[in-house]
Image (tube, rainbow, N blue to C red; front, side, top):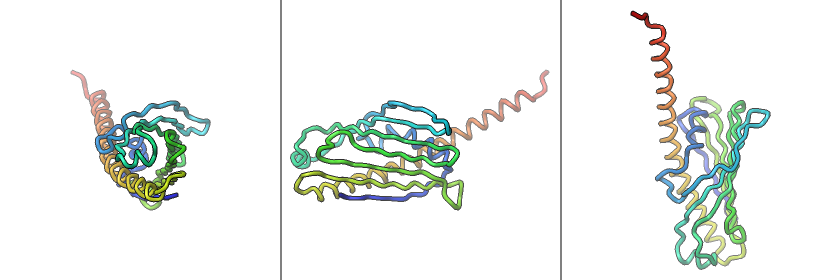
Length: 190
C-alpha cells in the first residue's frame, strides 16, 4: 500500500474554486479523462449538493505494466461522490476505481475549505491510497501510480487555477451586466 498526500492553497475564494472544481473535466492538461457522466445529483434537507459521477479514463500504460497486470485494457472507470456544503463551506470528493479492482485499488479523497486566515483563499487537501494486489513488483507499481497521481494533481491544480480565474471573470461580467441594466433602467427617458 502506498499513500500519497498533498495540500495546496488557491488564491481564490472557496465558492469560486468549487465552481471551477465542478468544471475541471474535460481539460487539455489531463487528456486521460475522456468522459464524465453525472449519474445522480440532488440536494439534501441541509442544503448540501450530492453528486455521483462516472469518469471514463484512458491510461496509456506501458506494455510491461499491461503484462504485469494481465490486461490489454486501458479504458478504466472511476466512481466519484462529492458533497458540497455551502453553509459549512466545505466540499469533499471521494473517488475509487471500479475497473481492475481485483488487481489495483485507488481511493482518493479531496477536501476544499476556506483558508482559516484569509477567506479570499481556499485550501485543498488531497490524499490517495494505492494498493496493488497479488502481483510481484506490487510496491514498484504502487510507487509508479503515486508518481502519476502526483503529476496529474499538479496539472489539476493548474487547471483549477485557470478555471477559477475564468469563473471570477464570469462573476465580474455578470455583476457589470447587472449594473448596466440597473443604470439603464434608472436613466431618464426622452
